[in-house]
Image (cartoon, rainbow, N blue to C red; front, side, top):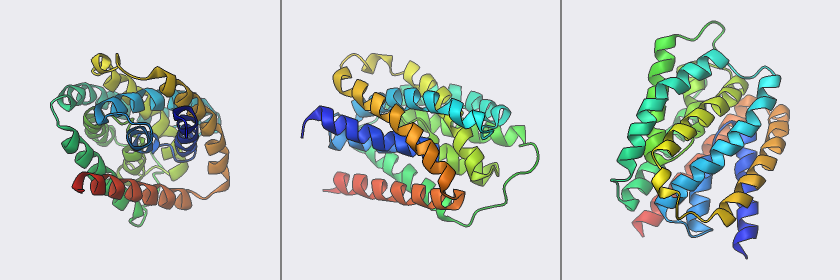
Length: 247
């Protein structure tokens, strides 16, 4: 199968995840770029950030129109992560490919387990600024190191730590992803020169289109079901990556 067809198919799936779940784009994009399209882990994490940044920014307005974006919380969350994301991006270049893959898989598994735990009552009042800033800083650091947009961690944090309802977490995470991805890319500019843009371009375009279908899917499926689907996908991806490192 040609690289173009694989890129279009994978992009559509990543877009569907971002549109429906508010995350999971880069945690799915990076393995797809490595195992389907032959990218190295470093190149895949940089390309994944580009794809997810573009897709999340285009998916955000539709969620905002439906009132599912907590702007103040999202901006505070994202702003707190900018500095750690930049520092994490600098650290990533010092890690080996196997260490980067293992760390990526471990974080995905932890996030999945957290999301499978019984949900807490959604917040009905203002989110505490210090709690939002602390969670955002931690997410930003992971985003910078692992080259992910952070949605697969932002959604669990917004639900489990800050108590947002699942649909609000989905919409707000897209705002966080857009900011964090851009900040992390600022420290990875030097790794973008050798990227295969003939693959990344169609991949990103398919992801943008897939995000619109994902948004419609989210309106038809309960928040709890979305959360369980998201968690199971993360566990599967983590298992595949750990097995690949071990063999």
